[in-house]
Image 1 (cartoon, rainbow, N blue to C red):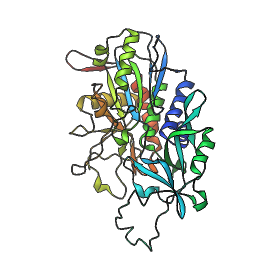
Image 2 (image 1 turned 135 degrees about the vertical axis):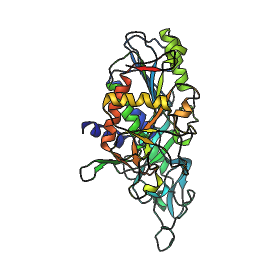
Image 3 (image 1 turned 30 degrees about the horizontal axis):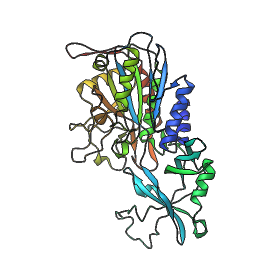
Image 4 (image 1 turned 90 degrees about the horizontal axis):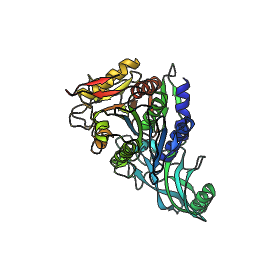
Length: 426
C-alpha cells in the first residue's frame, strides 16, 4: 500500500497539467536526473541520467547505459485531462460574479456540477528582467457550478443536453465580487500577470473505498495513473542493454496537435539528439526499439455490461490491459502483444484484453499518433477504469501496482530484432 499512498499524494497535488509534470520532475530529480535544455548543447555520458520538459506540461527522461545500447525502450502517457479552461477577460458580472470558461476535451459535464472547485495552472508574471512562468494553485474552495433545481428543469433526468455556454459557467461570488479575479491571481502569483493558462479542478481528494478498500477514486486517473506508474517503473528498473526513454505528453485529450503533444517533433528530436551526442546509429537503434503507449481502458460497467465486448471486457483488479482495434485506433498487433505479454509473464503481472464493442467506436490515444514520427512496434496498454472522463474516476488499487511491476520489468529488458523479423527479449 506504500506505492498507492505515493500515487495518492501525487494525484492530490497534480491539480493541472503543469503541476502533474512538476510532480514527476520532483521524482526524477530526487533520483538524480539532470535537467537538459532544448536550446543548449548536450554532453551525455555513460551512466548519465537526464530529463527535459517542454512548455512545462510535457517531459522526456532517459538513462545512458554504461555499454553501447542496442536500441530504445520507450513508453508514452499523457499529463492532461478533460476540464474547463478559463478564458481571457474571464469575469462575467451581473447579479452574481461568474467565471467564463470553455470545455477542454470531452468530459462528462454533469459530473462537474455542485462540487467545490478551484483554479490551477500557470501564469506569466512580469519581472524586471522579462516574463516569468509560475505555477498557480488557489488552494481553497473558490468556485461551484450550481445545477438548476428539478422543479425548473423537469427533464434533467431524461437525457438533458448540457449547454457549455450556459449551464457550466462557475459561480465565483456575489455582485460585489466583480473585478476581483485579477487581483486574486496577482496576489497568489506574486506579481503582475500578463497571461495565463488556468483550469478548473475538483477539490475532492483521492479516496480508497470498498469493503476491502480495493477501489481508488480520484480526478484525472486518466491518464495520471499511467503517467505515474510508467515513471515509477522507469525509475525502479535495473540497467539493461537498451536505452530507456520515458515520455509524458500534453494535449492528448484534444488530439495531441500541440508543440507538447505526441503529434509534435519532440520525441523524434530528442532521440536524434541522443544518438548524435553518443555517436549512435539512429536507424539501427530504432530497428531494435519498442514503444508502450499507456492510456487507460474501459472496464466492464457493473450496471451496463451490455456496452462491453463480451470476450474482451477488462475488470477492475484484473491487471494491466492490452488494447486492440482493427482500424489502428489502438496500435497493438500480434507482435507487440506477444512482446508485452512476455514482459508481464516475467514480472508475474496479469494481462487482460480490450476491444470496443463492434458497434460502439471508442476513442484513440497516443500510440498511433507517435508512430507517424517514430515508427516502431507499439503496444497500447492501460489500466481498467470506470467513469472515464468524469470529474472523479475509479479504478482498482491493485492494477496500479501491477502496472509499476510490469513497467519495471519492461524497462529492465533488452529487445533485439533478428534478421527474420523475430524478437529476442532478455
